[in-house]
Length: 362
Image (tube, rainbow, N blue to C red; front, side, top):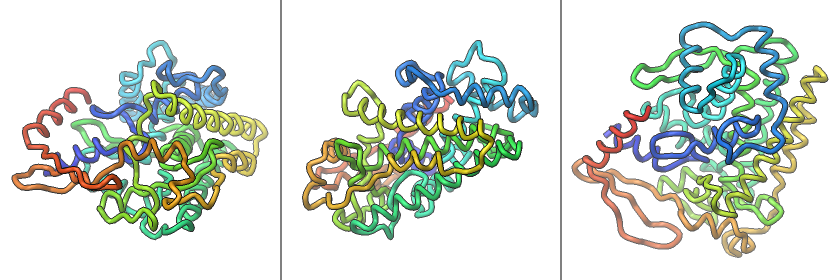
């Protein structure tokens, strides 16, 4: 049954997807694109120079040589094809990717069900993903969710600047290797925490309903959607699998991902300027975040969120709860905003086949 629950989590993305057998590397690709690495589709024409600053620092302090950290770099290199890059660059990129993945995994394997469940279905986990928790009700819930996410981002920004100002660059974190388990690795802290900043800002373009000027109209709700206890007037729009996609063949996705990366580039470049000034003041970086989190009240479910294109897209594929069925099968409940639509049954042989596919890939 534990493996079956895993399939639910991997097929039901909580945020822009992270790399797995059944999901695309949205967070990793979007984040790497900001520093001129990763797949060409997400690379920015004028990437941030922050990578160069981080690499120069690592060349001074050295890349950790412990077995676990070196294994992490090797694993990342194999997944993202960093052939030809020097050790310092690969180490910084690995730390950046680890940070971008951390809000979804907390460093643990995706088959560690207790941690996966906590990462997705607890109130305290929602802020990093720009989502409502159970108490964020009515229109006030939007601002409450924004405030918590801003506070989480502020702590990350402060940590990055403090690490540079105090020359305390390494951070000890948990990392899980397939078929081995969790180990402790030493990551380059500024890149690791910057990756978490990236994740939250990227999610703010997957878990919000925005207008044509990118102002936020509403924040999505994952927990109550998954618990089959969502009242959209009270709880906000249900989480959308459609908005978790990052296939830029769609003009809508290209538009919102371009905007997310544009804002993140501003953040990255301001980090570089602030670090260069040897400042620990987060104000300059956080002022850029004001543009990301502008909230426009008055657009709610009853007026169809003022006709936003984002809600139309979100409702193309609304996330639905899953229920355990008989004989260890999985019943997918299709009830939702568009009404009942029957159910599907995923039988154990299908689950085993998908699990084997995952094992061959990881």
